[in-house]
Amino acid sequence: MHAASVVELNAGALRLAVRPDLGGCLAGFWCDDLPVLLSADASAMTAARPSASYPLVPYSNRLGYCRFRWQGHEYTTRPNFDNSPHSVHGVGWQRPWQLVEQSATQALLRLEHPGDADWPFAFIAEQTFELTADQLTLRLALTNTDKRAAPAGLGWHPYFPKRQRSRLHVELTDRWESDPSTQLPTRKVAQPGIDADVAHLAFDHCFEGWRGAARVRDEKLSVRMTSSEPYLVVYTPEHKPYFCVEPVSHVSNAIHMADPRAHGLRTLEPQQRMEAWMRLDVAPI
Image: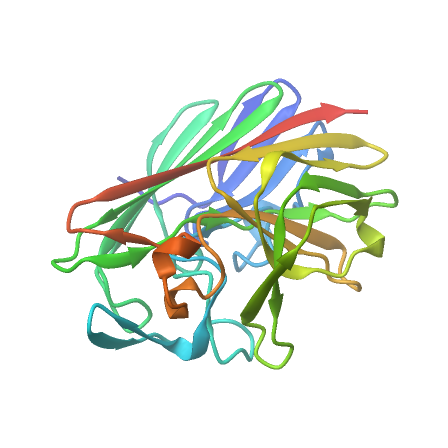
């Protein structure tokens, strides 16, 4: 294994740039010279956020107040996101990954986490990028290398550029409302779907009942997102040049809910492994 600054993949009109050393993030994704996801000069980046996308491992979104109880023991983490009192998006996006394999259209990265003050359980994570002429497939795998059973979740945090006519269509069943003072989910309400211009949306929510593909379309591109993961986080900040559509394995802050498993959080026994995938099909308009 060896470190790399920028890993580039090419297939047809699609081009990918990855920064293993910056949280294993996808620094840029283009169709010809048009950004499919929020993209920048990969060599000039200094952090994974924001980027085209970064991995969420070993949990997604907010872990409330940097503490949790798990199988009879109390654990703490550390705040890692702006001025939030919570731990956010796991640790993978803030750690250097190692490049294990690369070809013209594929790359494999690995992260070995020993367990520390940011996340107490040891694990190995692997990320695979696979590019074809019209499709990008991302895969994540998490293996518990700790001696204890560990809570586990996976996901991705893609950033889409907000263009003049950016529109999101996705079929759903429910939305988790959040306490505005804590940004933690409180109750589930019906949400039959989203079909609107992104400029008219005001979401920072986790959604359930995702069916079919999430479709992002604007005046230049059509992107079809599918995933193995059953939940979707949608973030549409009013004054930012991007919006996020994030496939995830569990509800935000599920570890603090009465039944974490019912809300997607996995328990991995020692040496047990979980996997996830996300696929983006890209078509110029």
